[in-house]
Amino acid sequence: MSAAAQIDDLSFSHSGADLPALERVSLLVPAGESIALLGPSGAGKTTLLTLLDGRLRGWRGRVSVLGASLDPDQPPPRVRRPDTGFVFQEFALVERSSVLRNVLNGRLGRMSPLRALLGSPTSHDLEIARRALSDCDISDLAERRADSLSGGQRQRVAIARCLAQEPRLILADEPVSNLDPARAGEILSLLTGAARVRGATALFSSHQPDLARRFAQRIVGMRGGRIVFDVPTSELNEDATAELYREAEPMPGSGLRVVS
Ligand SMILES: Nc1ncnc2c1ncn2[C@@H]1O[C@H](COP(=O)(O)OP(=O)(O)OP(=O)(O)O)[C@@H](O)[C@H]1O
Ligand SMILES: [Mg+2]
Image 1 (cartoon, rainbow, N blue to C red):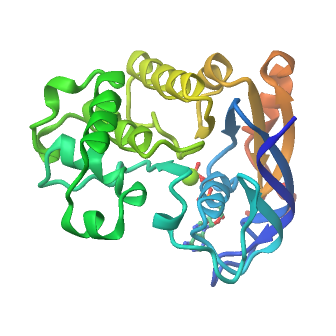
Image 2: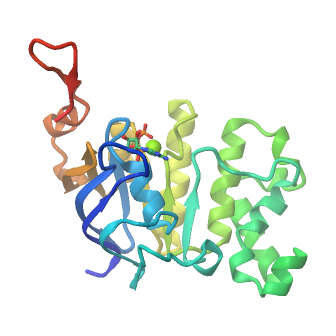
């Protein structure tokens, strides 16, 4: 089985933090699958996704993404790694630009430096962007400004921009956290379906075990910076999921609460 990402014995602390955000994490992300990261707030999901996106420095361990080792001291700039796409929780759209412009921004890493600088897409770039709009069912919004859209529409634009990049690995941090359950299902279906059709791998974090079950082939549970389980969805155990979200136990005789 080939791996879209391979992580061995990874530990990382944010600067100024008392506890590590990731502790001795080892994980193999199989190529071509959709994988969900579950875990309570503070488990380390965003940290792990951000690290795989090459935006953190100073970690320990070994990490390779799409066959290339990441250097903990000097990760290459994003624009040099168009094969990895990221869907941000807050969308990170250019508010005053049109939907089409936002989606074309996903092509920047695929354009020549001059075209990227001038914001001048080729007809091929435009074709790919229009296909992404169509796949996300927002072709009719192409000329609308991003700041005039609803939350669900913005979410679709963020996914279309990522698809326009033609990534082989899609990292998505809580891509449906702001949506009602029906809309959340639609968006996750869109994201994982588009990844499958393109032969890409999708790794997304979520707080919703039911959605993770519906749309991921594999589920990774995290808590306190560690991986607690990593199983095919068909083998996910209810107790293991409940345990993941268990409240921290009160420490006897003190007002403190400890998370194990
Ligand atoms: N920039 C930062 N500086 C210091 N500590 C941070 C920073 N970002 C995250 N942390 C800490 O790292 C740990 C993991 O945080 P992370 O955001 O990765 O968790 P998460 O699983 O994504 O949580 P959530 O479900 O709330 O999004 C937490 O203890 C958090 O407080
Ligand atoms: Mg998070």
